[in-house]
Length: 476
Image 1 (cartoon, rainbow, N blue to C red):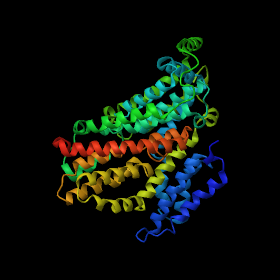
Image 2: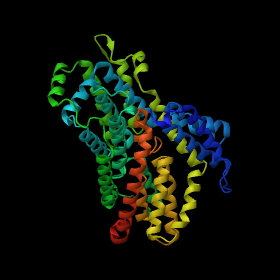
Image 3: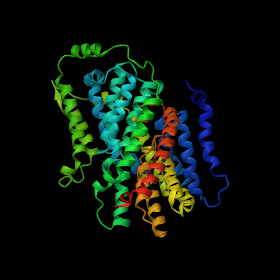
Image 4: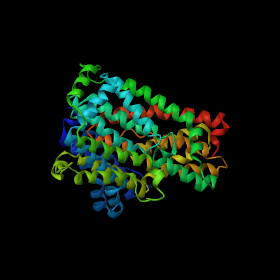
């Protein structure tokens, strides 16, 4: 047990004390609602890191604070607890439980171990790269929701059932979470923050369609830099227990052979999950005919089918079994992070922070790159990557247009910085899902802080060089 978790009473008290402190510190321009928002941020961050209560319990704090202190209408937060992404996680959780019910998770775990080998450092790098590659074309939450059940199954097979108490379990979970964030910057399809940025550019800069190909080509040097720095960090930052496994590929092959041929229920489990993933990948192909069929409803649809489809008279999944084996806290943790972001945005707390820093960038040049990239990185850790972009991109465009300068290079830099959410469950969908599956949040915060600093420096330096010496970087 870590020192930070060894005194739960102290940690319980510190959270609300931080909330109270925000109401008494001098800041005349900060209204009570914004003070409550910043106080809630500190309270939730402290409880997430020290864990005096379950992570999911902390996820309900926004509702209580909104109801008691009236910082925002409580009804405005309720959608966060039944959002499309929460539905997606619910569906994916049901489908992963089908795997557990019929042993498909064990088969997938053995196949993964046989493919990647027993070297744990290699596995960390491999899962990071897979997550990063998939997130270039899919939202990070979708990728993390699809990959984490496979990772958890593999870890369970080698005896790691508590990710938070295992360095390797936490490292593997963070490799997936951080890989989805890093890869998301490469294309507009990488997530909501990128599409939001495209919308702002079309509305305030181009006046017409912003081509996805323009994003890919202009941001390629910057995104490749971010990927390279993150990969180097992942390879060196973790020292998992037993760097090399005690058994080799022959053992995994023997164990896989003992399972025999895949059973019919296993095949159903694989088909249901695989079909949901394919539908998420190919959304654009059927969006015209089924405009409301978001990937979330694909996962939910096939999850519900698991309760209907029968084999030898028995359903693939019974509710009693699902209720006991699903990771319910994952849903509430994710929803709490989204609600926190809404409060910071709706109370004007995020904008207050942004407007205090924006004047420092009024001269343009390197100073502007420093201020806007730092502002975005800070907001991304504390609100969410989507909320951070919603605040910083309009301010960036307005600031530089008022100065008669081209805002596009600075928007590109801010967009990449907005995908660097690593430190808290509220920072991105990937980190929320990893925390929900039990990774050590203290490790997420500590190592995420270092990775955030490194990537901020990389984005700041390379972004400034591109904006200064490559005219094409300012094209939209």
